[in-house]
Amino acid sequence: MSIDGNQDFNGEAVILVHGLAAIRLAMWPIAKRLRKCGYHVKNYGYFSISRTIADHSRHLGEVLDEFEMDPSVKKFHLVTHSMGCIIGRHLLNQRPFEKLQRWVMLAPPNRGSHVARVMTPYLGRICTPLAQLSDAPDSFVNQLDDFRRTNDVDFAIVEAAYDRVIASSCVPLEGQSEYTVVKSNHGPLPWHAESIKFVEQFLTQKQSEIGT
Image 1 (cartoon, one colour):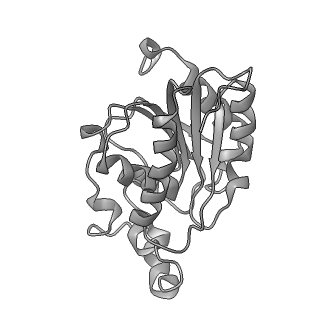
Image 2 (tube, rainbow, N blue to C red):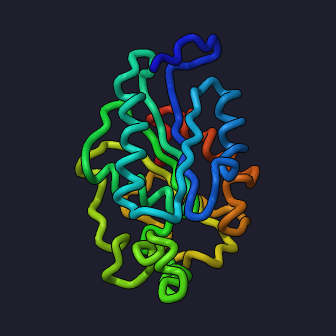
Image 3 (cartoon, rainbow, N blue to C red):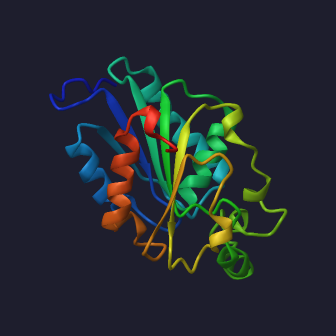
């Protein structure tokens, strides 16, 4: 893969990952904005309700490997929504990515979701990752290690103020560089103008400005 034929390409790529029961359209507004900024954008789509989070992370890793090996890409970033954040966390726990620089998590269930816990007995058989996203103490998401041990990446979190899927206390994650709250519900968060602006600013700001 080589993407240096784009005259507006700034040498940086961004991989977008949607959440559970969503499609690539969920991340389209962010993709549109970042392409205008000169990024090469990969709006990654996957059939989210089948297979485990480990399976999804393995396939996402193949996408990141393409950018790792592409000489035209100087560095790349992640922007993930909901379960996409957990897929990313599991992947980064497995191995390092040298070109990965920054990551924005939109409404991440970093400590799980009470809705996933309640719905697992009813929908768990047809929605494989649901039980893994539960806020139960022994759930998959609550057993994940700190990915910063394998990847030196600056990450920021956007919380949805009116989120009925994830409790506010389950969103933060130790080590976040920035944290903001947007007046949005869970699903529409990637379409919210403030979310899109935050993503752009975090990915483009200088290293010295992060966390200030």
